[in-house]
Image 1 (cartoon, rainbow, N blue to C red):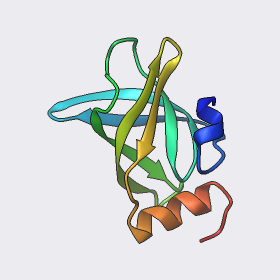
Image 2: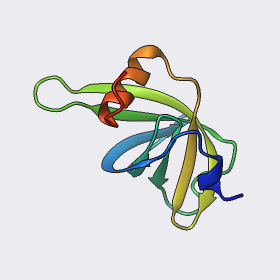
Image 3: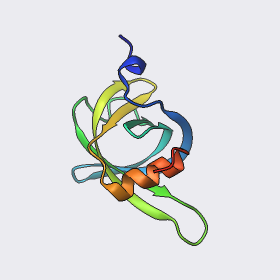
Image 4: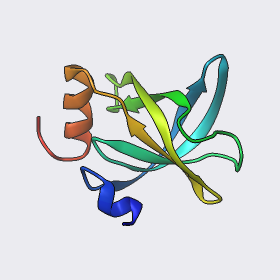
Length: 106
């Protein structure tokens, strides 16, 4: 079974810089795709390992009212192309913001 078959929700292409934190280590990386269940990040090879807890600071909205959401996650898969993360349960404001960003409604 491929990783795509195991996903609980389809990812959508996104291109946005996000702040990724692992413990006390922080780095900017590019978010390549996103779903309500997880994301794929362009992170340097070997930067993270499977099952590592991480946090993604994601800015949603534009203009005068952007909001930063801190999304707790866990590394699901690491490849030379990037790192797949699986979100931990989302709080309602974060779930609603991601749903809106992805065009799902709330």
